[in-house]
Image (tube, rainbow, N blue to C red; front, side, top):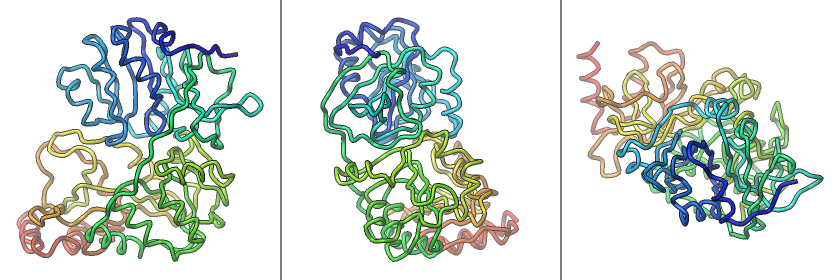
Amino acid sequence: MPKVISPSEFVDLLKPEMKVFIQGCTAEPPTLLDALTASPESSKGVEYVGVPLPGYNKFDPAALHPEARMITFFMTPELRRSSAAERIRFIPLHYSGIYRYLKSMPDLDMVLVQAAAGDRDGRCSFGLTSEHAPGALESARTVVVEMNSAIPFTNCEPDLPLDRIDYIVESNRAPPTFPSPQRGEQAEAVGRNAASLIHDGDVLQIGIGRLQSAVMRELRTHRDLGFHSGLISDETLDLVEAGALTGAKKSIDPGIIVTGAVFGSERLHDFATDESVRMHGVGYTHEVPIIATIDNFVSINGGMMVDLYGQIVADNLRGRQITAPGGYSDFQRGARLANGGRSIVLMTSASPDGARSNIISALPAGSVVTGTRSDTDYVVTDHGVADLRHKDMDEKAKAIISIAHPDFREQLERDWHERS
């Protein structure tokens, strides 16, 4: 049985040269992080590992001590100072690749996770985020859990075995809530255009952001939609309440909302305990062979820019690492393999002030391609839908130019004709 310890006893467990995974997303263990902050000397020589999400996870463990380090699979604004000091190693893996890396890591000494308090026949719940924790637990030598009585006890597959936990730090801290993003006219136009590609009975993967939120709002009159995604938001619950999302026609997990994380309000937290919701690790939510078995699977992701070849920039622009590849390619490639599946990329045609086109003739120097030209079925902007399937290079370019802001189309056409 696990031993209950205090936060100060927890930091005493840390030793130089340890490698320690910290669960991110909506399951950061706040009491454990507070204890690390209050005892910076305990992080001397420790290498932390994490998957922090930009805008949500603001903790920088590499800043705790001059000799602390971090391996990260996402870059966040809060990590940039430590990155500049060469205390951060960024590894650009797909989400499924991160899970496999953690699962097989031979030198992972400790895992820090937050979980819901209580157990059901010796099994615990990861609460609001499962994601990479099940993989990390397979390789870690020591498991420390912040057992939070304020976290909803969700239905997890796999769940957290009580006998896998070595130490428990108890807490009662309300989990963070995340409001739905403000959309605006551009986003709403993108949402309308993207919704035209979604059919009744489709199974959705969609993330968070104003464009994604706008798409979800346009789907409330659809019927028998399904959900298999890395996360759920308040917009997911809105579709359930509107009668649009039932999962009745899913080829696997019928009637079940499959997710790895819960991002939203207290209302969504309450809903996450429903029997229709299953929290899975990334080894299920993002595995291409599993996604490929889901009929009519639709992957919906956001992009920053697209060039006239159909190459998508979504995580690294002009050499600046803004986020990470994440689950982008996992879901795109799974969708391409699924019966009736398709991938959709959302973006605004231009900057909010209209001064800069997001559809460009050539990618800016130093930018990294997130979505290859052969993986994207549709690009959607506020000016329309570009169907890129089975098109030659000229046809792709013509389709992409057609959804650019009108102020930039003529120049894009000239650029393409000069190149070709």
